[in-house]
Amino acid sequence: MASYQAEQLKEQGNAAFRNGEYLEAEDCYTQAVQKYSRNPLIFTNRANARLRLQRWDGAVNDCLKSIELTGAGAQNHKAFYFLGERVVLVVVVVLSELCGGGGGQASDSQAQLALHHPHEALSSALTAYEQVLHPSPAAKLSPKDLETFSAFVLKCKKAKFAVRDRERLRRQGDLRAELEESLEAQKQRELDKVSSQLDRQELGQIEAGERGQEILDSFDRKAGELRAVFAAADPASHKPREIPDHLVDMITFEPMHDPVMTRNGHSYERATIYEHLKRSATDPLTREPLAVGDLRNNFGLRAACEEFWESGASEWIGDW
Figure 1 (spheres, one colour):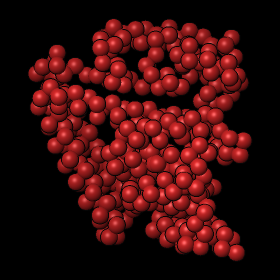
Figure 2 (cartoon, rainbow, N blue to C red):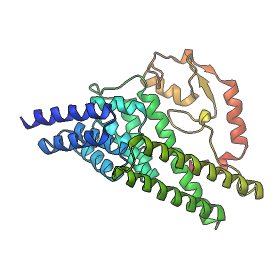
Figure 3 (cartoon, rainbow, N blue to C red):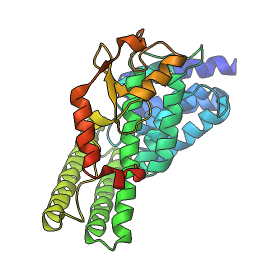
């Protein structure tokens, strides 16, 4: 009886979430937990609602509880995904669709990034990605899930790399690192202020999201201008250490050397896709049938890869 009541409350929460009523959704999920606390889907759904409300600590706790209930090795990709992603305003639309059905491992990485734990976020994101890449028979996945999760892993890797790069500069006693950290701290204070206003219902969800995006855009612009100034003043010490997205293999998330292309335009590192096709004769991003004979050399991308490696990337790529 208790589990049935909890399921009814969960469905009410799902309906409120789809309507953008995140406080009501959180309340319904909380009532559901009070009725029956052994359903991991309720905790995952409440984590998603708390992400929308920017209640990061609560989201992390819910994700960890969901993972505890399913077992660390069980299929629960949404809990891990939510746990890792850096969400400041709202989660992308696909998460709303995922949440409507209930379940799993995605939330961990979102909240970890929001709480500035990029190393933990990447670990959670990779776990979620692996569970989507090699799902259990009962897993509920949409055709776009793998692309969404792989793009998110890349986002986490970039966040982790940015932290390492800042640490490198700090060890060198670099002024730029100190200024970037000051900017980051100021940005976080402003985001926390918006979150508190949302929590006190002084701001609506849409207005809070817009203000959060304005803060992010403003500080990204300032950080870019800061790096440009230092690069112009001291090119040798402040040469950009960046990996363009199109050079990254979306299976290993490492920069490519010898890219090949599928018929639908996806490019992968040759050795990586060959190894994947030994296990599964499908495109890892689209799940469409794929064979080695379908692959073609991507000469244009290879030239870009060669230019990237010749720029001196091998000197710092270990931090990636």
